[in-house]
Image (cartoon, rainbow, N blue to C red; front, side, top):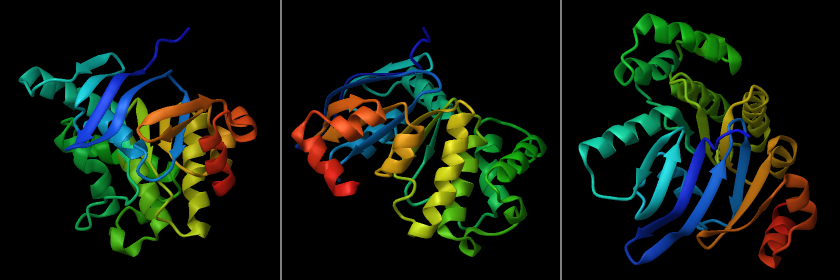
Amino acid sequence: MATDIIKVENLEKHFGELQVLKDVSLNVKPKEVVVIFGRSGSGKSTLLRCLNFLEYPTGGCIEVDGTRLEYGHPTRARRDAIRQIRMKAGMVFQEFNLFPHLTVMENLIEAPVTVRGESKKEATERGKELLDKVGLSEKADQYPIRLSGGQKQRVAIARALNMRPKIMLFDEPTSALDPELIGEVLAVMKKLAEEGMTMMVVSHEMGFAREVADRMCFFDDGVILEEGPPDQMIRDAQHERTKRFLEAVL
């Protein structure tokens, strides 16, 4: 049986007096696709941001591909561990977060060159392959302002992949898109899943979840209230809160 590539143990996150994550534990296996869904403010995005240490947990432990980090004060060793985790876990945001002053290709090669120390040539060659993968080869020299929302998000996915991550974290990647652009982003994500990429996806796209996910987790008030295979969750949720939420989005 494959060793878990993500281990979350008793994770907590407070923002002042507000506790957003409450003793959350979750394991993910290599090549598994986990879709996390729930009401706005339930803690879904905070979980992903804690996994990549864009938010610092206030309790618990996170392990990503063998790099383990328990809650504690910043030290050089902790900073090194966070850097390792960030290189292993690519992140795609709701609002794209592309650098507006850089071309598409410059966006793709910035992190591999500055963080991994790769040559510009190496990063660019892989960037070309990734733009082809997401169907945007012709956009390499364009600036983000010239792209549609769906194109920006596909560039953001290619940018994350250019760091050669073992895991991809998607934080509501289609929620800022017009309905006709959602499909082109989900198609790229589906292709990644088929290729065996480990993925954690915060999304309310139930069609995508039913087709692609191995497991769904329903977040409610900072805890995982219920989890299971997509068909079981969608057709036969056990908790009343899960049922009410699914009735609203399906």
